[in-house]
Length: 434
Image (tube, rainbow, N blue to C red; front, side, top):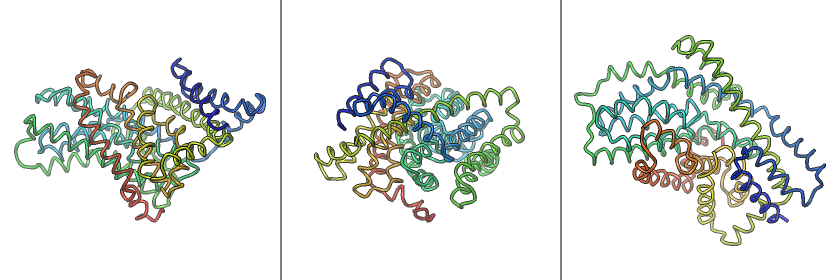
């Protein structure tokens, strides 16, 4: 029954997605189709409605709309320029300093805004003119911008990690947030190394003269209010001062204060547009989470995770091989699915398998988010990659040769995160969260 239900679910899901049906609707229809051979239609509909309601009636879920709103306010609040200036003050002397600046600013801005595409658009737009003026290869610049933008999704506050917490049965958000720092730095660090090597080969120079400590101090002060959002949110959660949901509300208040009072970059008209955009995005994500609860119920009822676990363990009981298989499946899925729906679909399938051989849910959560974030920069979907290409006025054919180097560095990071648990577990353990 399990494999029959799985085949029906996947077939319906694939056909509906090809037809252009929204992902949330596709998941709901596919889930109901999979359960109908074993349950009557009236019972299925009522139970599905109850599952959608229960899936969206959690206190933790409120954090996602608030963090989306805070991120959108920061996106419009003149944050990118300050972060770019600060990172350039640090990295200005290294070869290809603008490429390195792009990577560092993407990591910071992506963490603050919660959007890889927003980071690629805002930061990439800020450094593009300078790169063009200084004679950089603009195809390389676009590749660097796109490859590094998703690193911020691992650095908290992260909506992807909150979504994983919800679907994984309540994994500690504080532990996940702390666990994401080192993998996010690994992603960004790998991109920086690639950028430095290519820049050195191409003969790009850094800024001339001595290191300007005064400039670093002034740009640091300008960027500090924005960076403080991360410190306030994560520090408050880890210290137990407030929950992730309360932190998200504080983030909105702080972002409003920063953008309206300090930077004076948002007026009432722009704020109204931000609220509408945030509501639309939040509505889609919350409905998607509710519908995914139906899919989780169908999987549990029909025994799909257990059947897949049995099949995988029938091939091998070696955790190393199992993790390779899971990572390959996730990488393939990430090429045509966004991060949030992929987390909602694959977590109930693979988490029990990994927990069965001793993997921590926190470790698995970081692995799956890291893996699926790669889909942001891989065709055919790869929305972040295409944003970077548009911002850099390049093309996919011209960017891909450089992207191959970045893919290599990012995949090495994925292997490190997958097979060295302490890279993710060290900070949460140090904070006493595990």
